[in-house]
Length: 228
Ligand SMILES: *Cc1c(COP(=O)(O)O)cnc(C)c1O
Image (cartoon, rainbow, N blue to C red):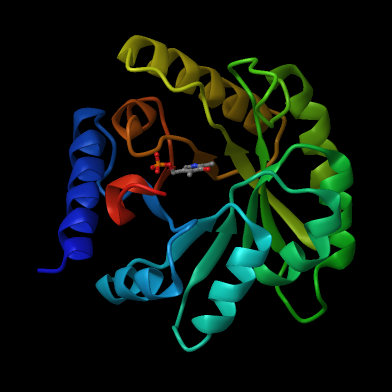
């Protein structure tokens, strides 16, 4: 068994165990493999195991990997890092999803720049529940207005909420932050938006995220190893 195979299987097992512990249906949580900083050949190896969705933080890096891996069937590229407006045109052509939308201007640019002939770009609103000024994301109170405005745009399809809570080893604090994200997600759904994605939880805290309702966890280190 390759290093990647063992690591990937271990993560799938952690997800399965957490789903069961939370009384959730097996297979209800998707795994996004976060391949940022790792070479295209690492993505190829993990794709060969059956993984299809990969997360990237830098637009140019993702564009290069997408081009290098154009022969791979079924790969889904997802942007999860901060997106500047001068990168939206390339992002709109490279990604299947942008999970880190936290300003209407970015969503408007993605909508205008999504190439003809590609399906609508799936997007999530990044919500900041920890109040850290250095992090992206809208405060939960501003999410409904942003969601309504994005839902009205052409060429993008609003799918849900993404969050990156402040890291903490305290499971109760992890759960409280994930719960706040889920409450934000539920509040948006209660307005009638057809959202299906709550993207939260990483290598260190995916169990707490799944216990609080994550539909997708984003895992880098536990699959690919430590980043330089
Ligand atoms: C890097 C990154 C991850 C993966 O984090 P790990 O701790 O390596 O699992 C998840 N989400 C976002 C937004 C990231 O930037």
